[in-house]
Every structure is written in C-alpha cells, then in structure tokens.
Length: 168
Image: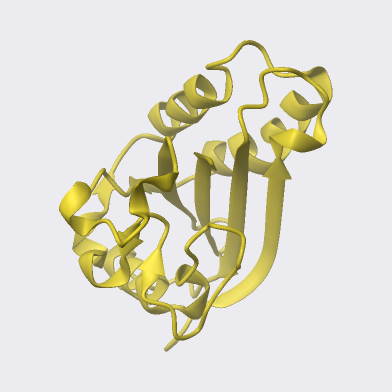
C-alpha cells in the first residue's frame, strides 16, 4: 500500500451543544483503512505524507499543497516524532481537556464516547504527537489554546484513526 484511504471523518463541535463551558472546543477524527501487515512506523509515515494530514485545523480543511498541520509546520512532523502512549492515558488526557470547564452535557458526552473514547478503547497501539515547541510553530501556530493529537491503530478493524482535539 502506498497511501492511506480515508474511510470516515467525524467532527464534534462543542458549540453545537448549549452550555456555557463549550470553550470553543472541538474534536476531529479521521479514520483510514490499512493493510493488516503494515508496520506501525510505516503507517505513521504514510499518515504524515497523506493529504488529509495537511490540515491546519483553522476552518479551511485539508489543503493538498498545505505546509501546516495544526500549529506546526509540516516539515517538523515525522513518523519518528510520535511517541507510544497507552490508550487509557490518551483517553484521560482528552477527558481532562473536555471537562476543563465543567461536566459536558449528556448528549455531548454520548457523542464523545461514541466518536472519540470508543476509538481509543479499540486501540492495539496508540501514539501521541507531543508538543514540538514554539520553534516548530508556523506563523500563527499559537492560535489553539490546547492541541491534542493521537494516532490510534486498530488491527482488528484494519483501521488507523487520527484524533485531534483542540480549542480556538
């Protein structure tokens, strides 16, 4: 396989739920089909090279010629930049971020459970893109107050998911 195939995308916008603590937060999950024999580092390399990874998460969507990913210049992100993390640890970090302004409304909590936490729970392997530092920021890279990124590999379902949770 020379590229990933986008299978689904889910965008959870906290502003769609009426509560004072939405904090302009959102979570984006892009799911890809993978070959069962592909190695983790190969999959991470394919993800970083994929057009869907060229998303600045500032509302414009994916840009095939884009040079930004989230707050970072694309050139600073390699497969080797990702660090393995337990899926429970990843879910805990996202939950702390989601609950930082108080409990979520029941309907939003249900959507987060189905679209984000269930994906993490199914992980055979989970990787985090750590903070790459301000020197890796593009021109307006500090626009997100928090930026969380996880890659989840689910061998049983032959899928890879890119989970980004941030606020703006």
